[in-house]
Amino acid sequence: DAGITQSPRYKITETGRQVTLMCHQTWSHSYMFWYRQDLGHGLRLIYYSAAADITDKGEVPDGYVVSRSKTENFPLTLESATRSQTSVYFCASSDRTGVSYEQYFGPGTRLTVT
Amino acid sequence: AQKVTQAQTEISVVEKEDVTLDCVYETRDTTYYLFWYKQPPSGELVFLIRRNSFDEQNEISGRYSWNFQKSTSSFNFTITASQVVDSAVYFCALSSYNQGGKLIFGQGTELSVKP
Image 1: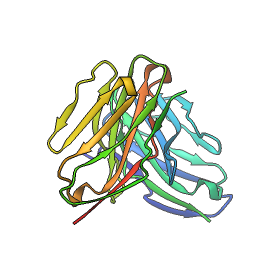
Image 2: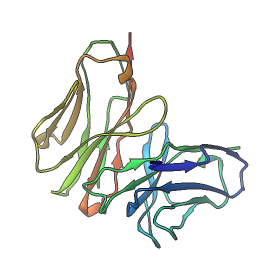
Image 3: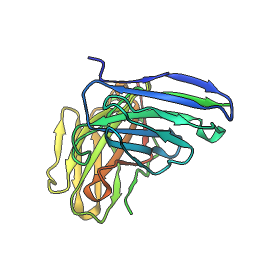
């Protein structure tokens, strides 16, 4: 019973490089989300997906790309990493519509862009 | 616009003290949900409670209790007889239908419980 997993857990990359963060859930939840956590900002939504092949922007989508070809996977790609994207990234999932259902979070990926 | 404010950035208490974490929200929607999450030092986010906008009954779960008051747009969280294991960052969050169910988080309150 893995639940929701993220990989890698830690990543150091250089400015300008492409980086992909992986998220996998085993519950077949319809909704999946990507957040970033920065000191003083709490968690901010980057992108979310209501189902396979359906994605939408959140509060801070610039510089990120997502895809969802399978229900269980929701990768987040930084096309050209910048230092401002140094952060902790959390993936989450939720059953049915996300309004009244709590989101379950993965363990997070700590990304450092040098 | 929707917003969640947790004015207390850090709180430090001594074990066995009671502590209240404040959460004030803003929304124009009539149907919404409020949540509290806990983030212990290990980093994961743990769901604690969900409350809908039509239910103002206070809730108690062990040492935890929540006070929801629509008149003041507040959803405060009280820990009674705090313990060192309660040390964590606590987030309040808001979700509504008109926002497509997206969670809006407060900035978090870091609680430190000292022995």
